[in-house]
Length: 435
Image (cartoon, rainbow, N blue to C red; front, side, top):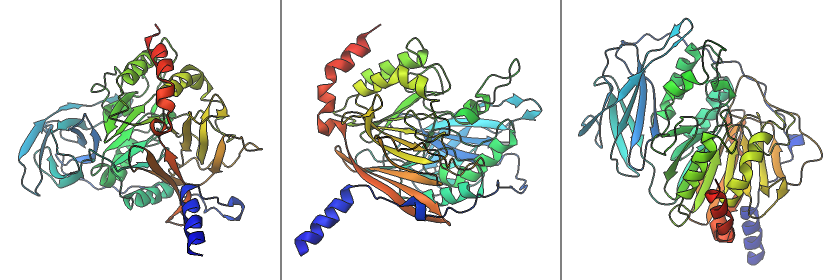
């Protein structure tokens, strides 16, 4: 009897949870959040967020209304006692009748891993604290895209705050400002409690474009406010870059910049993959906005061009997981490549369900494709815990009347452990060496 209980427990742990969605009644949509005016001194740091900027460094970003405010960050491991100070840079931008505040970017470090630091921006104002990621497994990522600024966004952020994560990954569509530049400011204030404490690593979506023909190039606001470590990873564009956490190499790609084989992004991707050492970083993740595997009727086929250009390269590189947004729903695939289940392909996850104002994408194509394992149109977030070099645990947590409900989960074995990396070594070498 005890043996039978152990078998049942083990089987249930290593397979995904099946949820009969027909019995689930989704809560109603929630309105866009409205923010009350809360005047602060012009020097006061606002919209504070942090991002990784190399192996032992962190970029601190904030906004002030005072153009003369210095771009300095004081920091240390004890509250109120700052043993180090770093000088950074600043920028600003104008967008039609809107003028941004002074946007500061300051890199601090070297920092110890898995350590709490206290810091202050601009030489005065409140004290913040951050925690650096670990240098070894386990490491946990919070994952969600298409956030926006609604009541459901607030619920999602509250749920993520309950998660013991190290880094937040966001595959595009942050503020849903959509040309209304003050909405970038309110978004920065909304996410500050989380984004000032743990690094947020983001890539762009369609709602970050905000281009106006003949007047404004795309991504001006996004690039000014959310500077990622593109220079540190050898990229020429803030729209694609890479970084490493513990034993994980993560590549952030751009769905809305050129991606064909002659593009700068493709050339950079080949160069970046050539530097990956799977003995040091056995896990390889890729994020971008528009999903390649999507059985929802919304945005169907929009990722086909990028998929045709890049999938064979990512397959040869033995990418373990691909995380995307754009579709306002959740879906998880089997390991898949070229439209078919493949044990050496990537697990594709669509997680564009952060809480945006456009609502959920309820329509799915039937019958469900063979590669699709789980799909549901609900708001929520994902958690990815890389336990060691061979195993990771993925879970999706549905927002259910303000309670995070774990609705899908699965153990994932790395492709290094399965032997796929060694099998495709020559294939990858030939692609990387091709002109």
